[in-house]
Length: 360
Image 1: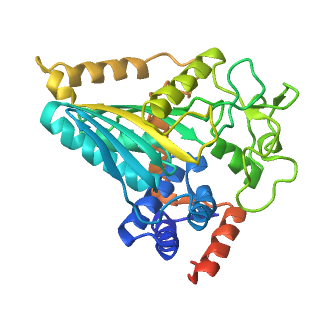
Image 2: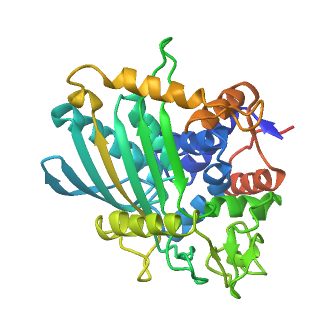
């Protein structure tokens, strides 16, 4: 079924507010989750709500944001998120990066002990909207669910990377370059969506305990996965990395840069679940000595889009194009809400004393 963006956003906002989040923070969480669905990435969107509510109940995340600045040195900041919601901490990182870039043109923010940060490309988009270039390396401590290249045992996290470069067309349309991907073959959330809805996964999404390719969610969730929030560490297999040794190497780099460097920790040890993120943000105008950057970016993007396609009717895109198209459609038609997920939201609403909206 389709549900309007305003309706689902209001519903999720009320859920998080009744679960203990301040109104403003509840809205930030809801908007970020709904935008993930609207952008074509439901793996990082509404499907996460039951898990987030369980996190609050278990004490895995704080419903009220509290963080501490541990290091304040020149352009460098180290923040301890103290297990607050990642969607709220992400906005703090964006604000801090903008402040640092106003002063010097560069901001480097290391974040540890954050709740799930959601779709990392969302933070690159917000910074690009402010005219800032950004690179983000992320790890998921306490989430050893990906096998390094050549292995069949889980050793690392899905380790996302995002890069954002601002770009506006001649008619002032915003068309930022937003590269955002997990270094795993698929994000764990996509396997969760498959487990809930039966959607197809790549044949080599995972490797089972015998070292064979698998596309069955039970490979990581176990054969008897039950309840709203299956544990991705319960199975005997692991998610594979993308691009064989290349994705694996980048995933390992994320563990080091976003885990070891930030203090979130790597998956060499058992740790409480949290995200670590290293964000490098710069103001391109500080380098724009001859006013060349905007024209160069525009010319380059145009040249890529003008590439002759391999298949007629399937033009060459730049990172960020699919999300823009999906978002435009979602604004008009709403986002898809699977019945199984709707049932979970209804059950959560009943537990919290919320009157859920009527769904067609």
